[in-house]
Image (cartoon, rainbow, N blue to C red; front, top):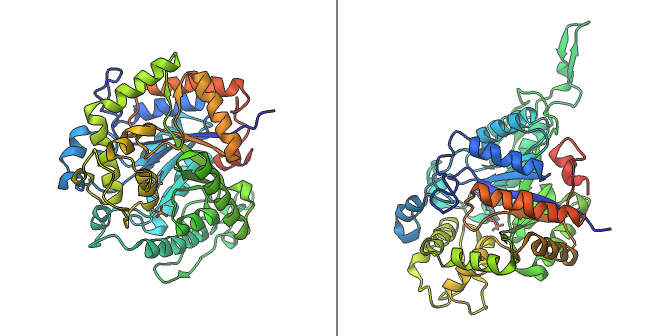
Length: 437
Ligand SMILES: Cc1cc2nc3c(=O)[nH]c(=O)nc-3n(C[C@H](O)[C@H](O)[C@H](O)COP(=O)(O)O)c2cc1C
């Protein structure tokens, strides 16, 4: 019997693809495009749809916001994912919905109340993608001159998580009585102050909203540095991973699982989902031609360079496309994403780094083919890696309805025929579905 794996979709509340031959978008701001997308993914039994987020318009690529705004695809403009998730919650009933919310931007109390409220609206299907933000421009929107160093960001994130989890738990599970006979809505003895006073934060508690169905909403995290991994191993229900090739994927998973065990958790409670960007068509040759067409489009390279520039605070416009990068690059931003992208030591030119394997930035393995051949390969990859699933995405996160339906009505049925993916939801909550296998 084949071992089932989990499937999510990694996107953002940005423009849907607006100027390709099969797109007519660019105006998703009333949320309806993403509601429809979530409904399609729910029909296909996805574990969750997740919305990444950033809190600034980047001016790193070429020293200006011109390129990112001109393309209008991928990183800006971008709406706040939290209200979108609430809207999706009302229009779906089974799929998990994950918003990225930054510990840099939200005071812990507001974040805990927001997540708890959305989890109630979603009846236990909400997840929080925990990020610390990784760009100076974001820090400058919140009163800082620059981004704190990574170590300090993670120190702050640890305390932040400790605090919000105390807030989530400030209402005991049976605090709400709705006892008509004795006239008691909530029992004050089961709602507690937390009196948190730490190095960075101070909060009295309790939350002033009721405990949500999951109590602590599902926690999702992406981070590849040793501190990032330790953090994921301690808190995450699911980890967003990008590793080049099955060997690196397996090493990453083994490491997170070992760290989770060392932190006293059951490693099976931490699911690793790897980003992939499959290209699907009727035949393998057509899929290859489709990929080649996409990767050679004039805007493809620039959009990917904008993306990697904005998440690393490094101007990739300054490098020669037809030469390898001049040296090993480091950043106070997304180092894990940068390492995955730069493939240091491979000798590849920048053009190769951008155009191979879906831009290198998002894809863990190359998947170009028919629904059948790609499903087969995904099964083999999971077999080699050990688990736990994939996060579907597209090179610069742009989606159109055709891309979505190639997956929901082509790839997913092919996975289901192989017994690799669920055909119905077994549990009511996001965490329940993640833990089911
Ligand atoms: C695939 C992936 C997706 C990410 N998505 C976001 C995001 O949506 N918003 C954000 O601020 N940071 C995002 N990050 C950044 C991470 O949260 C983290 O800050 C960053 O990877 C630096 O940590 P590290 O050095 O441990 O990798 C993402 C990272 C990765 C690898």
